[in-house]
Image (cartoon, rainbow over the protein chains, first blue to last red):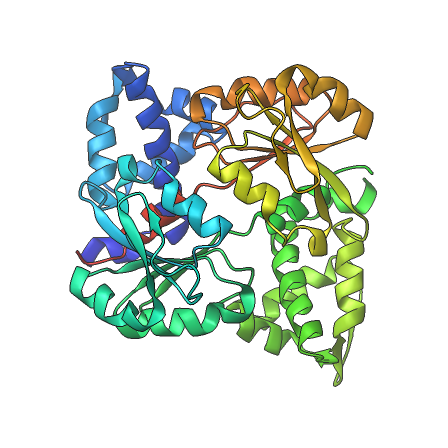
Length: 208
Length: 208
């Protein structure tokens, strides 16, 4: 880890947002940008962006700013998404289906490689190239594929048990769609997708 | 706004997480809890929880802690989710379908009340009680229903134009699933759901 261990997690959390904006700029065939322009697009101060990036080195030149493609590649490398990560999805209801079909992962370093569900009626169903597998095969498949990342899309009541099984199988990064905070051992990371929590954050500011 | 305007947004952002944990405790028929127990469940320090809640008043008693149901109701009131908010969904592809079918909103203060899509092949399709409407009806329907909150589930390239239309129709809170940062006028709030960004945040810490 060395230097990296000292970089605040909140800085790491902003890098994917910078990467996303740089990806858009590449689509727009923009060659150069500045911390000012990035900041305008993202609603983040240019000073913050320069400070965040300075943790990792010198990416721009006074006057000309950042080369978009170069900065994009550097951040991809820092976040380790200049390779493809395979992912497991557990729970293939409506949400799991949407995740399995989602085309936005591939360009950003991820591929859904295996699907699991506890419902015998869903097991065997094909989604694209994949067949939904039973939970009994979870550990073996995750180990066979060397999977480290899983998305949990089961009901809240089942999410902790699913997380435990995934971690036991070797998964160390969980994206949890179930509306429950998971208990995980040190060394395992969890991120949460909870749309209702985001909505409730906004209603505070609304005048009914 | 009065007192409220001075409460940091990061505190407001944690209230939905507290509410979610309290909701689970109610399901578990737990009558009392403490900042310590809440903190353990959420991976947040008990001091932080007490400090966050102290912005809004005195909710617990030294010794007995918090009455779960009472604290739950108080936070629901603070976040204004002790009522039902109607929402519009724009974009009814796989993701929009999953959102329209999602049963987790209702218990947390929200109901999807109207669906829009630009694709004539989708317009007219029924999802549950709702029929997908064409974009031409967006402004009129949103005004008729008094909708203030919308979820954007269209491709990145269309998201800004959709946001502009929604805001013009009177929407002031956007939950954006498109992987792009939106430009919005003051007074309009945006929250983002970007699973790939969460995944990239975690891969930083993974050893390939």
